[in-house]
Length: 270
Length: 270
DNA sequence: CCGATGGTTCCATTATTCAGAACTCAATTT
DNA sequence: AAATTGAGTTCTGAATAATGGAACCATCGG
Image (cartoon, rainbow over all chains, first blue to last red):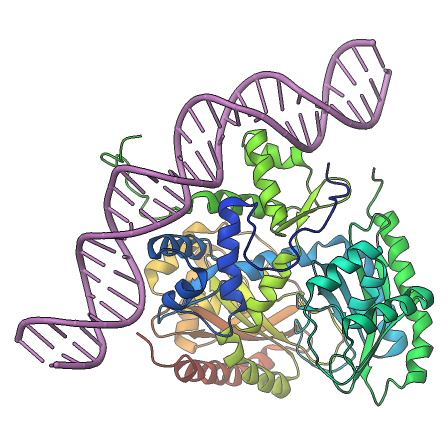
């Protein structure tokens, strides 16, 4: 049964295999609309979805009826509010996040920089929490975001926890995009992973965004049923390389605290 | 299966009935799991859902496969991470929120208190944004949350924008829970709504939580395709009744700015 | 070893969904 | 003004996926 679900099957949201019947088809539509830059008209969706008009019409109708999509005044489709409601519940009760929360706060206090908690999903990292300093900044800006795995501290930390076969599977499934001069390539990434496994820390040296650095450490369950990471992020002028080294240990400690919290917190299992 | 000869029973005229086929059934399950206080076992869900074992098994399988649910190591079901991803996209691109954002920031600067943006969905208010002062506080704590409509500033403000028939429909569909001594009842609520329509401002005088007050104003589109509100919230010791009055106008102004932004921002419609 | 409890698989039956065409409605073009 | 196009909606029998019931595996506790 489901303890170890074996292998990761569908890495990306490309529409090819549907093992999920009707739901799968609807989720493809939902993805199309949520990934769009702006609300889409019926015909726009029709062109991408490649379904008969009548069928698409009913499907969109159902999604709308359920609040997963919404129809704007001009007839275009946008993601619905029901998603926010569902997600906020999902987030609020997430055990991993709840357990991690106090440790994240402590780390934020210690470093004064922004602390992130993320978890691996398919070939992306999804941010589960973020604790900032005192700036009245955009919240939610990161939480829930799916980010590339090869150029974020949390992503690389998470990767380092995986066995080689899953690592390879993920690396080969991702298309590497060059965000900055320092962004890694598939080859350099493997080297990095080795370093991370040795030292216990992943670094992001302006690989995703110029001027932003971070130091991270992996957090994972014994059975690898989930894999994630914690990180401290900040502007390059504050996070000098010495600083990064200085915080490497506290970050690892935080990761360890979270992991031991998980072993207790999730209760007796198996 | 003969075609649907004569429909014997008409739709219920007061409540909208859901005709969403398979999706509807799955969403019910998703709701069950996301509303639970903790992850549920198969049997727990079985008891609530009232479906045959085999059916439920497949449905949960599909939801899990799509990442809407996830099975923990011990086999229990919890909301999945896919929801966060979907919601963050939904949130990030929400036109209403994008248009409102600068105005919310301005209001926060002016008052120094927490500013909320919410929108009516069914008989609840869903918070779309929140701008806080400088405390490093829980983010996301409100965003996406569905809150009762009769004891929050934003909720009452939103209600005041509705025509009486829709107002009645909502009021009669909600069960009023008494949170504090000041929580309104269906009868007092109607009086309040009249006041709000007159003055343009809704107040929450510790009706939801003792020690918390707020002043709000309605924000809505001409055609009422959506209805929401903005509010300034804070602790009672800072938000004296004089203060509330003082901020009533700025809050209304903010609401108006957002509405005029919407008229332009959403472009030509209809 | 037995008998619970909790979860999974199979398969004929049945209800939903599908596809494609026909239809409405408005805005443009001629 | 009539004709044409574009965008969206509503019908159908036919195809497909969902259903429900029972039989089938695990574990666990005695």
